[in-house]
Length: 254
Figure 1 (cartoon, rainbow, N blue to C red):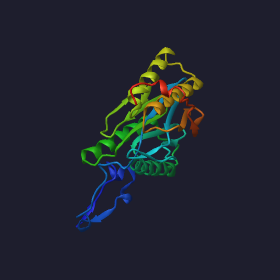
Figure 2: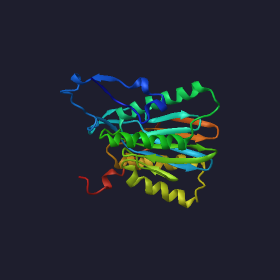
Figure 3: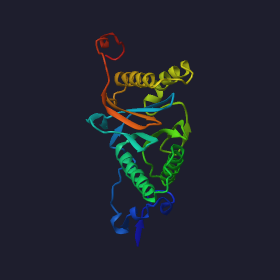
Figure 4: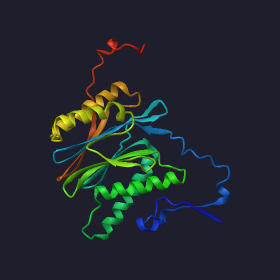
């Protein structure tokens, strides 16, 4: 007897059948699984729409528990010329799904039919993958932000580890959902949704600075992805401009 682990829902339809390993049942006894206890994790991802595109930002720290262990864990993925994706949560699960997405894009390129994956398609596909793994009680411990241009219109969506998904003009994961999202939403609404690329960049930089001050799992180096009609540009690592001279004025943390 062999145990077959399906990587994704509808395995054959996505072309992943050859990546399904067969593990003898005898090898499964005594195996200690770590999938429900993420080892190396990454914190917030921030994103906002702007006039003509979408911008995403994420720092490069991989935390080993509470230890700031790995300082160069990039988490923003260029999927194609009109999609960028970023993830928070378990870094190993992100690497796994990144390899699956990469193979999906290669398979599409091999068709050479003139069609490209669109943001909403990837967003919908991710909901099925995440919900499938959650339903098997073996979730991929991540929250994804998908940004891109859907037929020329900026698109921004979020998918969590349960497969729950929604779209919004500004999004943040992790601790950023509590202290960065209000800042993003406030500035976006003040500009009536007409942020320029420079304003979006400054806004994300400000939010990352706040997170660096307040989130113990954040880092001062980050990547910035910009999706426009010209394509996807990922910059970084960039550095947060911080100032700790006011630290002695903060009360309640002694």
